[in-house]
Image (cartoon, rainbow, N blue to C red):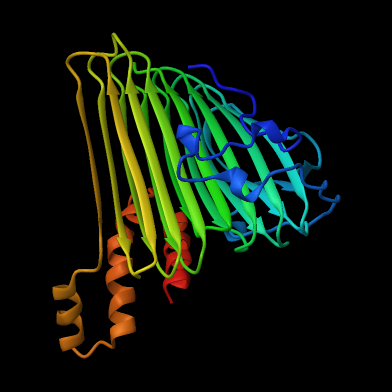
Length: 344
């Protein structure tokens, strides 16, 4: 798989995709962005962020700029925790940044990655590159909290060596346009990919979770689960594509997307895809979009639970499966608190 350096470049409006580009069919960037925005000013923020209580060193990009080396190399074996922050304080301006993370062979990294909107009307464009050595492990937790008038784009390209493992969970609450995109070159050979996503959208917010996993050799595993809820006039987009190349026999790849629409004006667009060019594989995908179970809601109300509380309880139970798949307990509890806050 060949990764472009930056598919969308804020300095080049010809790269802004419209709905005519298949991969951007449901997220029409050109509708909202037609010309290069003015550059965001330099700024600083205090250390912290939503993951501050979980420890680890921190690298912060503020309006696209980082102090010191704009990347991370983790080596020496053992387990490490790092907080990667993308903070936008700009007002009606744009910025972009590139960050490279390398996890050396036999080393484990928990990366707590946050997108923090402290400004308004900004455009943020982030390109990330991850390289995992043989037997390396990356647990990537992405948390996005941005204002409803922001445009936020982020693309992560992941290269893995044999025996490496990627576990990823992305939690988003949307913006004017918010797109989190992940592309993985899966080497097979015992490597494992676990990609999950969760979106909770209200008002007129838009969130797009797009993933591409390409199995280029045999005996690899991919497990993917995305769940979402939309209310009001919000729009959720899920695009998941798993490609099994010729010769990648023994691949086990499974993908599921399930969403609830809790209003008449809400919208969910889902496009799960499997492209299989090999024999002797176990691949499947599923997709469901519906509303809350009225029988379960009636039962909860018959037990004396007020309707708003009952709806929140059932919605949390529906989405909780994604959070339960996060392995580290303190991260899982923080994600659960994030969810409760957005369902309140």
